Image 1 (cartoon, rainbow, N blue to C red):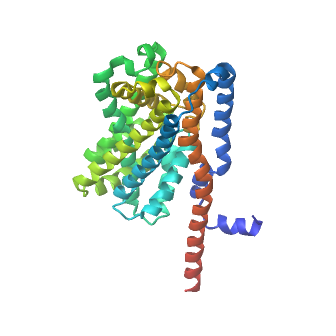
Image 2: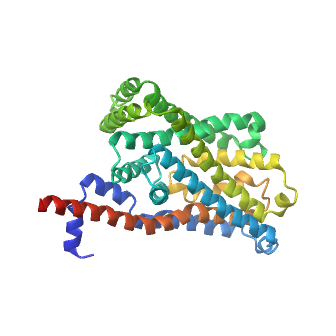
Length: 372
């Protein structure tokens, strides 16, 4: 890109927007990919067995389950598109939702925290001419829906499986502690956002500002003020919505997360003949529960998109269903390629085109204002 063109584009983007765009810079794709590759190579060195690989039954049934996994991934993307359509009151076309979900998933894949992903989502939605209140509603309600799927799902599934859903043998003390810490954090911020946007925004505002009065958290005061101002806008929007808006948003969220787990289950059925030959719905229900717990644990991952952590955690979580470590590694790698690295690749294609579209619209608007 020429220096003149670069300067022209920089003039169309504010410093704050540039910071957000840099957080999803395509060069950042290399970080999670490298982490994932290093971990997979290490695990292959430690666990891979060519005899196990050679004994995999590559039957038509296995192929069909891999195809089913790909179709389930498509269904998951459609569920996220449906949620975005609902939360925008149908202002986005299906084509626009298809594009924006790729960008949203990409931003989550290259950022280790939900804050980074939310900042990108706010920037993206702001370019689509939505009101500030609607943007705040989409961001906050998405967080509430996602967290409440886990907050409500864990105790419901615990009734059926108890400690068996933690990991083989009921879970080690370290894993159990890590899970409950992650689950507790999820309950805290999910409930905080829910209370703030549905019940009493002012109380949450006072609470956050009180927290920021402590020296250790004082540097977050400006962000807390902005957060509560966005909550006020979101609360005003949400209180106008019919029940169908809330129910539709949560059901599409539950469908998207369920499809995420079902994808893994399909891959397990493809590569583990014993699961396929003795198909047991109760066993599949337990696997679904185990995957729910695994994702709660991965929520605290310090790496972008859980890169490296997800691949290494997969086998230990499910080794009572996939006894061969090498086969578990193959399933984990294919799972991550289909559901994580594929979004990195798609984002690398979609985001530059989307940014060019944003800059073109701004350049055109600037030219029209100059001409008049």
